[in-house]
Length: 115
Image (tube, rainbow, N blue to C red; front, side, top):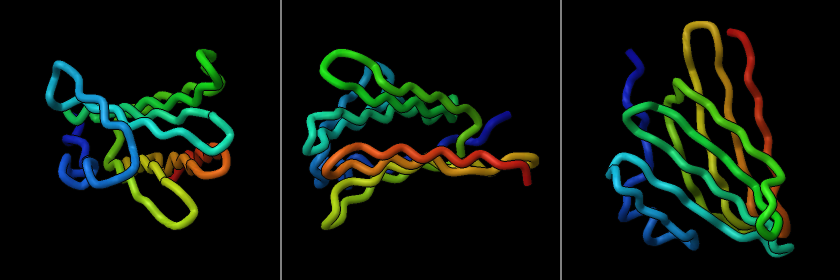
């Protein structure tokens, strides 16, 4: 069985410059941010399923879509350079980090490696 996903506290999310979308299920949430060039970055997580989905949109078109299961943690941070979304996976055979930096544009990095 997969452990429950560690996610940011709602009070912390409410203080960040992101749009927080609440879903019917209280364990599912989406954060959305818009880069200076108009690209939209979204990260949706499901605490119970320990899954994360990332989308990068330009206007209404999905430019990037990534989905991961068996995730361990999600972080949403703000800095002088913009926002940083991060989802980490550390399992018996695999480890990695999926990051999205939102500032002047959206940069997605996905490192998934055997351990």
